[in-house]
Length: 171
Image (cartoon, rainbow, N blue to C red; front, side):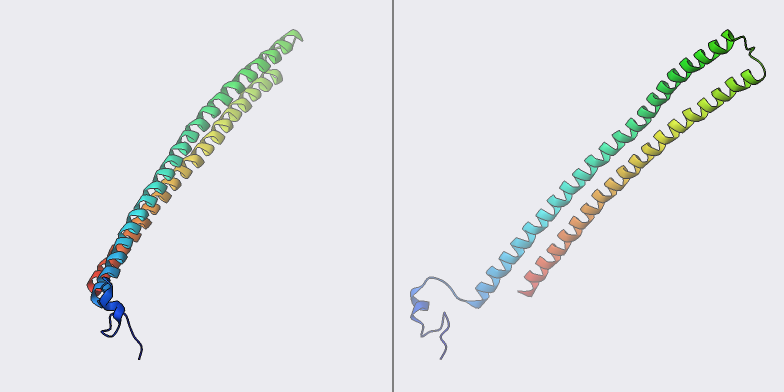
């Protein structure tokens, strides 16, 4: 005959203070399971909050980079204007000193240069705006990832709560 703890002919059962009652063991096991689920649910929420905070911080960095891209574009336009005006002044002085009248081909050349300069300014700002837009998109994406992390954490928490209720009801 197989002896089990708690059987009447087992001397250990009568000498030990441990209660081997199956109902008590089931209740203790359920309590431990529920406690573990509640701790896991809390950990899931803390993890979700941490990830959301990180993604929001990254979004703020991307927004700052978007502003910097515009500022860099404006600075590059300023530097281009400075260099262009200097070059055009030299060109006009050279044309004037060589006796060329500012009409006809010479005037068309200068007008063309100013037109090309305006196109270059617009290209510089366009590139800056595209870079800025890309950073803004990354910021939106990062915030969305943070929201998704929180959604997953809440879902995991709800699942653990439901599992805990199931464990209690099943006891």
